[in-house]
Length: 427
Ligand SMILES: Nc1nc2c(c(=O)[nH]1)N[C@H]1C(S)=C(S)[C@@H](COP(=O)(O)O)O[C@H]1N2
Ligand SMILES: [Mo]
Image (cartoon, rainbow, N blue to C red; front, side, top):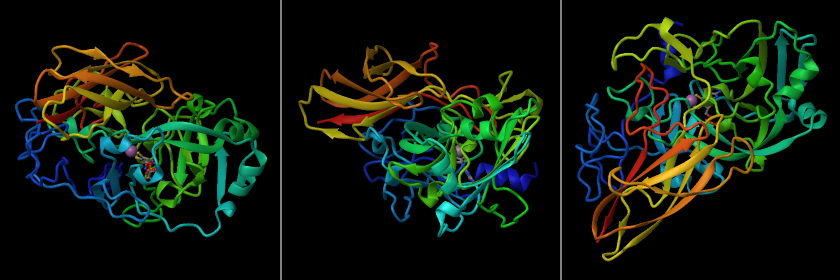
């Protein structure tokens, strides 16, 4: 892939804001990898935070200004437009559309005037090429509605040391909405997959950041088994409303549990290939992790990389918010949070109020359906007034637990699922 394309896919043309603050402070501590900023009363001191030397001078957070979007979404870049959801805004059981994160690689297309006339083509290794309008898709196939997590492949990237290339997500490149659409498998079955069908290649209507109409802004794909999973959907509604343009309306893919980049917005075409797809976002270090662990900060050898598929286990504290203050004498805190684990489920959430010296089990809900997130609650006792940190760590159904630090460094910072920490002040 050409450097310019790679930059666009990685969001490197965007302004980079490294960390975000809380309590209205403006100075972000260079070292505050997960939640840290400087100068506030309830803050994570540099010594406790991950040792992430500053690449750029500290900057204050910038907030997204976009019609229909919550003004507390944090702007990570404006060309292309990228914004994340602070953990405390993920407190609803179903993420409202106004709080849902935004990730674009190219230019935002103009909103279509006639959604039902939107055309999708299925071609390549199929017996019958399909050209179907959204209107026909709605009437010819049986629709389903499911609550499903969509998570950016780079979620957690901001915790890598040294910093990895791309948008510096904290934990907010994720949301869990109700999506309505049809299983992609049903459409692929009517096209009839040839035995040679191995991989999908997704195409869309958004222009490349450069404006070059011959280049896709991003074009990823998945193994045919994932495309045929009944949970992989072509969706046209989000939280009961027509899919908004900013989220890929009138119609997008939703490939649950895998990097969000596979969930092509403004979907126009799925080409079925006889081999792994090689579009922008598929090659070299894009959405890939090292096979043999590499030295942090090294250049990396593309031959040592594999495609990232299922996303790693993660949990966030959604209430209280980082930096919350409580009255003197408060002895107990009620906590709420969310957790998810790519293709797996979460089997356990542990909470610590003493920097990981001891842990207590949270109460964990079951997912509503496969690929839903799991909400959790806990109540913790505090022995005195003062500064506390609350840490959360999730364990997935195969026993993998969130690490203390973002590990297995890779040039574009995937798979960083360090524990979430908030600071609170009592009295
Ligand atoms: N056409 C198109 N689809 C796309 C993208 C894009 O830039 N263009 N970005 C992808 C990435 S990287 C992510 S994480 C999700 C984000 O979806 P959202 O903006 O609705 O939250 O969309 C994916 N689909
Ligand atoms: Mo993404």
